[in-house]
Length: 360
Figure (cartoon, rainbow, N blue to C red):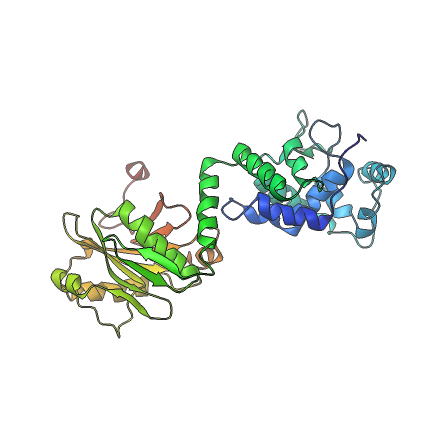
């Protein structure tokens, strides 16, 4: 086994993974969970690093124990590396990190969906799909990120350089947006309206999403946006444009169950009303909510064609979106603060279903 950096602790690996793969990365959970840290530890333990002649199999991760992990001399690590791939050996051990069948999520999730697509892990060439030979190793530049002699600013710079080289531009942009949003958690959130007015919202995830809707979504998707209504999750009214509401025929009844935000596009051919629900935990625009909101504009004589419904989330990977996805109403839109240039359209097929090529 070649000489290599000191073996980092499992805890150190887990902590660094959180920085290397921040929120905004697709399949992030597969790359920062305990299973990923343990997989990387085993690769470092046996010296399975790009450029060496060593590789691992997923089942080697399942065979590791805390007792073995504490044996860190070169000879002890080399002996285990050989023994762990020897047929019939290390079976029936007590205290193994995982059951034998856990090799499948290690292979399919942690490696194939997580670490390999990002360039963190490389595969051995020349092996058939069914080969039992070890085939996975850490990419050299990725392995260097776990050198515990590097810390502080130098480590941040090294991680940042790796991210710029191996993560997509879209992923990097998403990371920065989520980081920026996180900075608002402890302080009041300042929102600037399209007309230049400002408001302060209480700190929290809902306020962060509301800010993104008004400052990012509105100018991107509306010709001449205006804020008709803005409330906080505590039902506190932050902004209410009564004059604009009267001018377009909308009667806002405060005691009614209004949405978090009502936007108006006065620059569209026909004035467009956009009802927005901000979802940090729950409360998307489902079918019942859509019908209730439709009644508000129907009283003002608005045609349904001039009303839009939007549910805004912080990120696609957020638990709130996964929880609400099955409830979202057809004929509505979905938007994520972390990916402002994209919007999901849930077409309801009216007045008639269209062919797929017509939607491209």
